[in-house]
Length: 335
Ligand code: HPA
Ligand code: ZN
Image 1 (cartoon, rainbow, N blue to C red):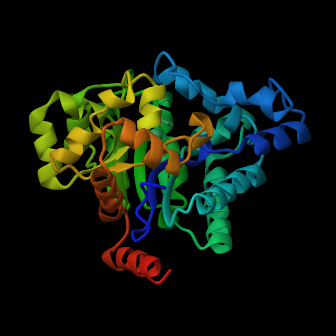
Image 2: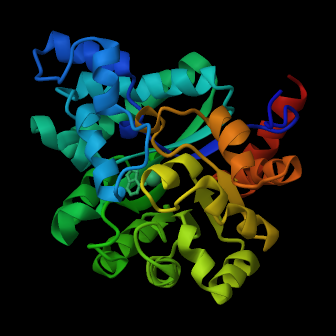
């Protein structure tokens, strides 16, 4: 039995494609290009790449990315991992996925051109969509940890594929690089016609969520865990229909929450916030979307009805027009 409602489309709105590289692919690319991997068999490599217990904080969790971006030796590798993300989403029964990526982060280990990486990701996603029939949109990330100046270059790289990208996001070290540094970047993103979602309220407090909404123009929030600190913020999210992309296991593994049961997702849903269930970095967290629905969500105190509501919320807040949303529902009903 599963908590996924079979009559509704299944959506993942928050998944990093550069945090979702197959262990097998890391091995293959590592072997082929003689990269200094910590192990050259699956079980030896697993503990270096995947997290099974909570890390001290977000930054330690993000360290794991190095084994994923570290194998991106060329544009072909970037295209491959983007395509494999779609194949994996299809296997999970996902009907529509929003995949996000940071071109600077992916380009850095092997000195690639971030615009070339962006193009390769667009091509790989298109390959995967064609092969699987899963629908997808791309979200471009500014990795705040690089600071405002490099993020402006990262934005330029993303803008070379403006029409193939749906939204702009801000990820990375929220504690040390507040959203205030990126106001100009997000103005340019909005002027390009992109939607805005921002990682906020994960490693910083409610004020970071307010800032994302008021100053960056976010219409969705990634994580938003610390909305719990501020009843006025909870009310604002509910009233304005600002969606929250929750990733329960990620929040546990980054020590943003001490346990599933301490997570405020249930409170968000009870307050009428359009909160959703997503994976974040399944390759690092060693989970899939089904695990989040069937194991993590009940542990966070959600009833079956709550989980159905979260699945419905994803359709409501997806970066899709009304016709595309209704087509997803029709396709599901027709099997
Ligand atoms: N927070 C910030 N940046 C990230 C995350 C996250 O949870 N996952 C991947 N990049
Ligand atoms: Zn994320």
